[in-house]
Image (cartoon, rainbow, N blue to C red):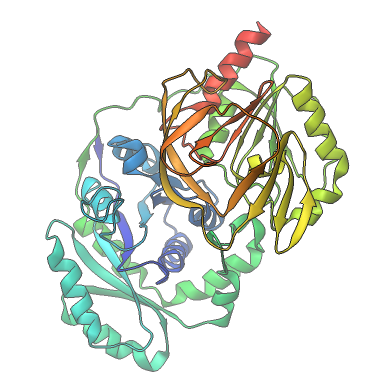
Length: 456
């Protein structure tokens, strides 16, 4: 098999230069012109892909070499099959990596694996000729990375010509610009984990803003460089591409969502759909009960931000507690773990939560851990047997003050968790800080198979 879809990697020399903004503007401009666009994100991320999905109406996929290895190529093939062009948003600076020494985990590494040309995003504020030095340095650092074009952001109309001259003077295509905009600043708001999740913003307003922003992108040039510089890639396996067998059981799953719990990789939902046809999405601010379900999933998100609304919904919190006490299956990550504790303290306010884990969650101003994590299971549990190694990522500003005594399920070899440990199992309910992608370790599949064995 061969990957031939034209593709572009959107990168910059550092974070917060407007990569997501440019990615969305490019995608909207292409879609408006009639192209079918597939979208991807380098590294572990829930938030940027949520914006991609608003623009395209289809899931955006993560390409994470650290967690997936060479699977990133198969994943790219699988999820770009039916598109005319693929847009891959990078992470951090172009060459920034996990260890800061090798290229592992960098945008540049993924660009090389996918044989994809790179478009630079350059912050145009208070700069002109220095743009040439930036381009030259990035291009010369690794000649195997094909930097072919640039988009400038955060600029004024009178600066555009100077910036265009600088970009073209270094032999790159000037693909457009993103003018400074109060509307853009409003819709692309930052919070402690990055941008606000798209599940919490006005989607119609978001689309309107990017409809305007896309006018400054030269679609013809974008398509030209993608087609001209994308190279074919051989893919060794198409395993899992044609698995369309419908589920044949009566199992029912509930997924806590709404604007509170939004951190779900699309593959998690798809894994569930492969096993179960009856899925109920539950809004923890509004819905009063879980309903008749066999499994409850609580992903990450921002329970601290919506603490007062979660506290007000006493009926649902009590129902979650009853669900756990009855021995039914539950899996929770990060924000879901926080929701299961006694309370959350945020901005000097304390909000009552489920109380299934005898602990208080305390929010901090700085991250407790932010990045990749590696842990080993030290006690047999519903997520796996002792000795199993888990690779994932932690993104949390909270810590737990424990009141009860717990035998933790996992111990971190890299990461924080709760003083180096993590994993609470209460009956058949399991919760930890660690985020795990199912293409790295299929936690959900394991729990569902266990549930199916129990039901049979």
